[in-house]
Amino acid sequence: MILYDCDIAPNPRRARMFIAEKGLNIEKIEVDIIGGENLTESFLSINPRGLLPVLELDDGTKIDEVMAICRYLEEIYPENPLLGSTPLEKARVEGYQRKMEFDGMIAVSEAFRNNAENERFSYRSLPGRDGTSAIEGLVERGLNTLDNFYIWLERYLTENEFVAGNNFTMADITAFVAVDFSKWVKRKIPKENTKTLEWYNKVSLRGSAKA
Image 1 (cartoon, helix red, strand yellow):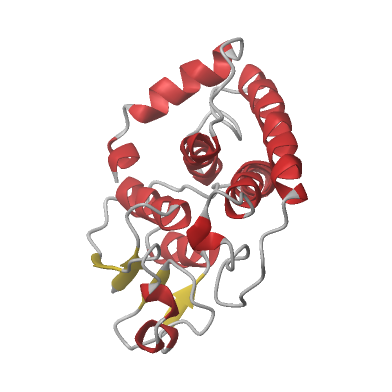
Image 2 (tube, rainbow, N blue to C red):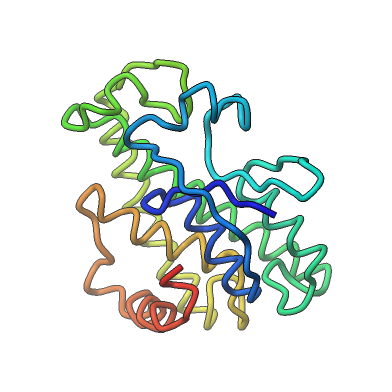
């Protein structure tokens, strides 16, 4: 298998963390998003949407979208489950993972890509190659959503050791990457969010955090 990757991008990092937690060794090919390599014809032949990551299987089948990649890997490598073991756990992980994605990851992306200071993305406010211009008002909306993300994350971690329960799961991976991604828009974990800070420090010590 081959993972088309980008070291600085948050979504590929989520896939790398999942792969690291599974203890898998998958070949990686670096694609330069900042330089626009993902929009060249050579990469668009791999993923016409121009998005990363992409997992290419040995038979040439290509899977894009982080959760589709993780679901595939979970099915063929079920040891150390990261998407839940029982029907209830699977539902909880799915629900919390989506919350971390929409309230955290997408909120930061909205604020970052629509910021006029980010000249490289002024014509790429949406991922891919559609050429959509930045919309200034979406910066504030993204930051407001991110503020709510931190409120909810603190609540979840007050109730559970990890985001979705007592086990480390994909919900934690997405939340952790979202927290680091939020630094791109000058947002950090609020100092009063003691449970979140404790959780973040704990996850930072995992080997996958360096993936």
